[in-house]
Length: 317
Image 1 (cartoon, helix red, strand yellow):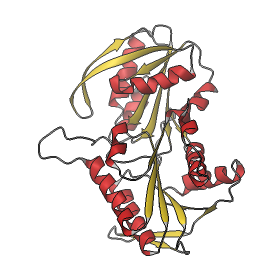
Image 2 (image 1 turned 90 degrees about the horizontal axis):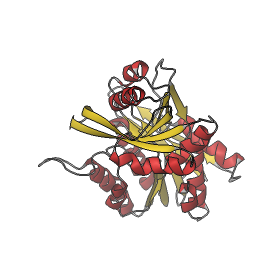
Image 3 (image 1 turned 90 degrees about the vertical axis):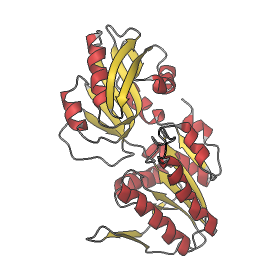
């Protein structure tokens, strides 16, 4: 089995290869893919080994415009090199918040991205996708190719169990996160549950928040799929502490961390904030921020796909 890496994800790819070899004994190798970027920003991928009639895996998050175009160019290079099957391992799938149109004459970015990825399959190369925590599960319906959608909660549950948190309360930051919070409540049966009702005036800006439930004397775990500017998390932590929470730990599968995110985190009442390495870490001096590896869950899904095994057990809490 050969696994190739995007330009920014060599460390994650090496970890996946290591897990596949040490825990699953699959004799996996990291493939030789050269990706050059010229001074004008253009990207040129080049496979330095034959992939003709082979099934290959390519690890790359589709977060930035460069990563998206890099992935399309690698898909094109693989197709032209005679690749038989291409599995895109994209821990984070960009544009997943654009799953519908809220305004007339606007685009649906998630659908466009799906169309472009699967268009390479029309050239005789089979394509499938492995990803974690799409912002909306319905995005899977945009694809006419197999999509393995992994449960990101699995990444954090074992890590949090080792923290031995007493008087735990799991909090959903909005209605959309209730299902996610339910997974954590299932993993921690002694935990209580609360949620925050929030009203937005525009993207990344909250008009008001209200707490539904009791967090007094509790150590709070607030869970979401994505952390962007962290403005919401900062306000949520303030609200929780005002209502008697002893401590606040934030969890988000994808650390987008744009804008004033690091300032918001540093100045917030959040004690620790856990994100996965689905998006490459950015230089910062915020000690509250901790990264948890996705290598294990991705390796398990690759092994299942390679051995034609069921994926369902991987997602079970």
